[in-house]
Image (cartoon, rainbow, N blue to C red; front, side, top):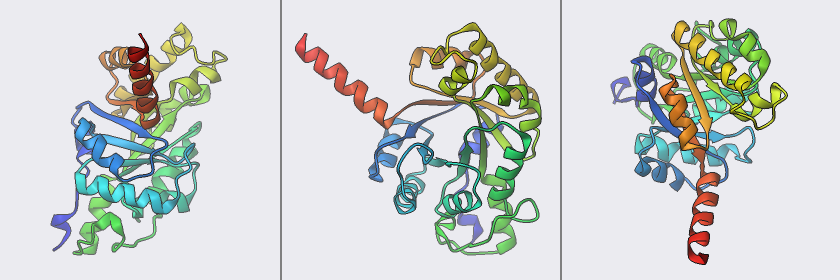
Length: 260
């Protein structure tokens, strides 16, 4: 078998064609069953939170392995701009990475460089890692496909990032500008006030600039009502809630219903 059998990143193709995609965050659950559950629920992707979560490399690798078998796109939020983290998660099979706390164009330049093989970037080559699904073929074609398919996401959660957005997302290879509303509100001195006009204006600015640049705007929130509003205002990558949020909300709803 050869490169024709490589699992392609359909999520990236959907975004490039202007389609909306829907996903969630994995924060606490370490069992690879999470990938199957999210697939059955109908999500297009999920993001493993390796910034705030306590996931080790082996756990991430197994969750991603099941995700690839289930054909749900596995993404990882890395802790910081570190080559070993970026290359390690991609070799484990992650189909894209999100870098938090982006503020400058150097952040996105570094992210793309770490994610792409030469001549585009500096990523080291290991074609027999899990990201190949152990299908081996022409090396040049393998590199071309992987450079095309990796999804690079800049998380916009600082006022400085909004101010510098045109430059930040002008880097070739950046596919998504994804808002972190709570951190963004904090950076404007309005912690938690994601409905405040100043924060709403900043989020809309990210949508407008991203669309103009040909980059997909995205957002992560726990409110279906708010997410629906932002979807209607142009958000393309919709990330809803998390495994922890689903557990808490489901438990609270059931207990209150039983006690009423």
